[in-house]
Length: 395
Image 1 (cartoon, rainbow, N blue to C red):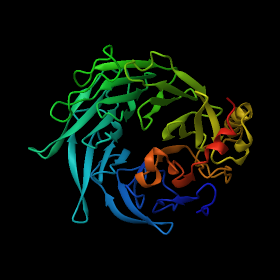
Image 2: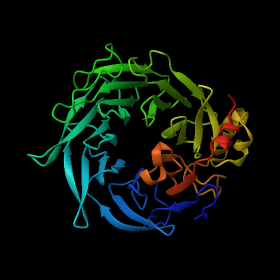
Image 3: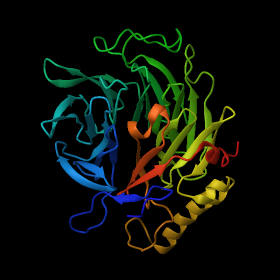
């Protein structure tokens, strides 16, 4: 492992038993205080490890799923884990007498579950799926299981979901190149939902469509800021989009602000503050986008010291990416070809997840976060100071 420094260092989470090569990590999540992490080494297992003294120690291996786990979320308030997988199932894991006990969620879907997320109050969770729908799940004590209500209206697979802080609104991104926002209030679980976005945005029952926001690429990830005033999403055309969500106004009615990334598409994003979001993906390098003077712009790359000196390297970064594929084509090299070359970044392959915890983000201001990738590494990152970030912006 590279020692922790300005970037925070990295750790290899799991090695293959036979080849001793790092196993790709498909998802990870931290507990409330950042002392334990749950991750999936690209199979049907969920490993829960403690993190003390800069070292990981696996304490539990959860094997209830039959196929690859696609997402994990760890609720800070109630210390419960929700997971979903390609086996079309989701489980809620409770720690009882030192063991993690699963409870099945009845999703009623016939395609893979692609993503899951707890609501802010952790009374519900949402699961995206390849069935062109998402499931909003809540607990039914009489039968000791989690049941779901399906929300459809998509034209293709749903890849990601995000909860508004109100607990009654959910946004979902799909491969039909749209973000849709729905009412997610459930009778008997939530109070009567308020008209957050005015009378033109229906909020009477679960599944009511509030708005549809089109884009020009697959939607990989979507996120709300801590106050819910900004909705951000990243698409496969190397763009990050920002939408104002003001009370009394339908989101998107005031337009969508689009920032073109200087490199390859981002597949995951995480709000660091109201005016700052970090994205990671095929560039193998977390990139910060920040708002200054009311406008969003691409800031520095956290694993690239040169980017701190200012942007303007967008064209060269994009050319370098294309040159990489051109060389791979000419030399016959591909992923896992054993060519022996390495990149000048902590991550050597696509970033598959970004996560933080309550202890690292007091008051909604994230000071530290982690990333995992298809290279099997978990990396820690310190959030740059505002003056360092803004000095790198070209607004």
